[in-house]
Length: 217
Image (cartoon, rainbow, N blue to C red):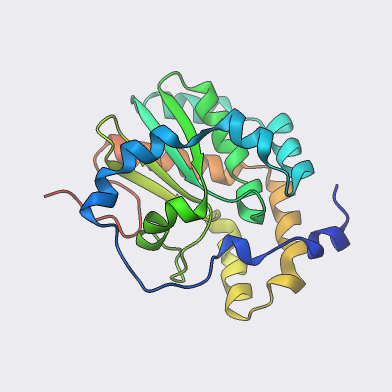
């Protein structure tokens, strides 16, 4: 377990990059998803290079588990699916969520996960914001075989948002980050996995879950 003093010393703002004018991806940016995904890092590539918060990345990847019932539900959504995770290694939310989504993708024959940084992913972060209006990492897009966004998952599980959004509003992240990391360690990715499988199920039934997504047609 990481000592709380070390947690406080780690960067916090990276999870909510500096505010920018509200924009939506241009037609060119939307059509670029295939190219962005094609040049994105595979999970092994990203994981090997993730130096910030290294011990937490390793713990969550090597010790994380995907419950069989969630695997079965995910398999039932068909596919093929592609998961594009917009993230930064230093982000406290990313290190506690993305490894579990990588485990899920690894266990599904029809699903692949790739990773890009916040600079590349900025248009989609701005289009699909957190409940309190921030462009944040991680922003995770679920893409179909035609490179259409069929769902997305933003920043952190709802159970954590129940207290963390108020922390952000009070600008008390530094004081409360230990509490957040303790919540993540105890929860061990289960809410993230459940919520993302729900995103997959909604995509399968053409009722996408994704803030900011404008239905086609």
